Image 1 (cartoon, rainbow, N blue to C red):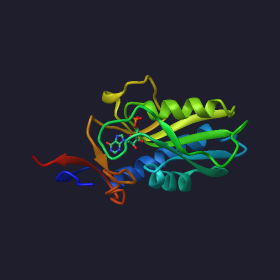
Image 2 (cartoon, protein in one colour):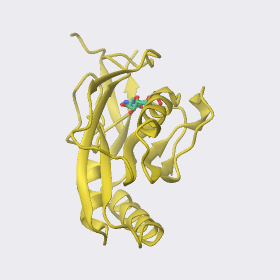
Image 3 (cartoon, rainbow, N blue to C red):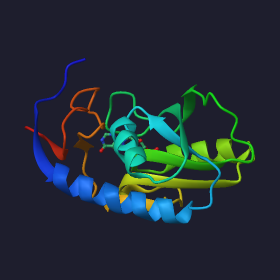
Image 4 (spheres, rainbow, N blue to C red):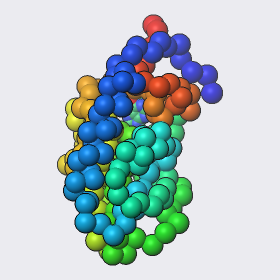
Length: 179
Ligand code: IMP
């Protein structure tokens, strides 16, 4: 695939991300303090770095599972036909579950995943999203915990890609297309 010429402008620094992840972990630890074991469900692929940092800051007994839902392809528009490409390995019936998402954009992906996981009768089912783009929301949905609310911009880094590139940037940057 040919990627249109673009530059990446820093938006959220690695230091600011780390500080926010620590705060989120404290809040999540308090909320689930009485859990017998929290199942942290990372939505692949964009959340993999966030999940890795967040779980190391949680002071709770946890398990990790992953789910992959299709949304974007390689374009900057959402595909509303959300499909499950990789399902959970474990049974979540009666379990406390935390879905960890990179970005809530239109909300279609999260809405679909929440509806699916609710059918499996978890005990508590909550969402932590690193980024929220409320300006683009089409489904009325919000994560219980959000790292940063950002404007309508296409971002990369800290696990988040543009056509599979730039996931390894340690910060969040805004993609700017060069005319
Ligand atoms: P939604 O279904 O529109 O909420 O889309 C959510 C998914 O779209 C996220 O999990 C990301 O994978 C992807 N996405 C949304 N915004 C961006 C962005 O700015 N950069 C890269 N991926 C994005």
